[in-house]
Image (cartoon, rainbow, N blue to C red; front, top):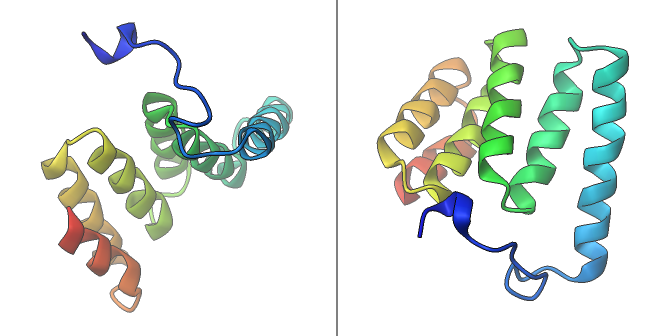
Length: 119
């Protein structure tokens, strides 16, 4: 069954409490409202992408991280976080490429080195 055909996961299946899901849903709503006011708000896309990642809405997270990178191509966290999404999708080559880009931008940040080692 393709990912798009899978039924929506329950909170228990996501290892999230109902409160966790509600909080992430509120973040998505709040950031969407900010984006409607300012379509160039990279921080709002980044925050919403993080919420989508936690909610396991991986394709939506990639779309938002792509937008962050379009708006701010020197933001290493966007590459690192998009790479984490690629890892969840088992797209390891894309993940490693993004971890490498994050390292290139900020070689003093240990997170993408650690994450790349796990990819």
